[in-house]
Image 1 (tube, rainbow, N blue to C red):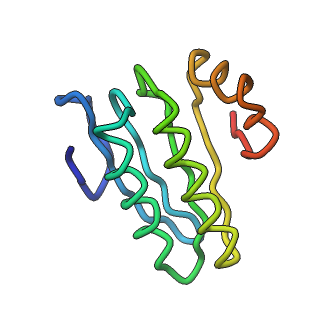
Image 2: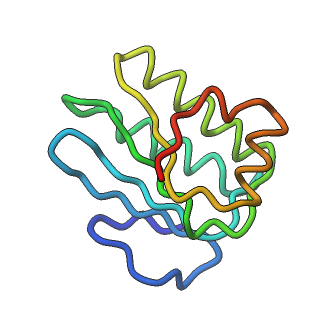
Length: 115
């Protein structure tokens, strides 16, 4: 699992996380498979990213090739934390296979999904 600051390039490992801070919103780009092995570092990064003046995070899932229930759990826990501190977690570039998973678990109503 990589944790890189700055603009993400092409995925070079099975899973990579990129964090990029903006004015009011932090952006975390996730690449690869989000499963039982990679969900905990994703959750940790998302929660660490909330330690900013404005805990609003965009999670770009456009390069996610697979996500299971542990990935969904990481997103839910991070969203709970964000809401607790007055922030929000937004999902962007959600692949169809992840969108179907969100819909199956009725999470498409919970998360704000950006185009």
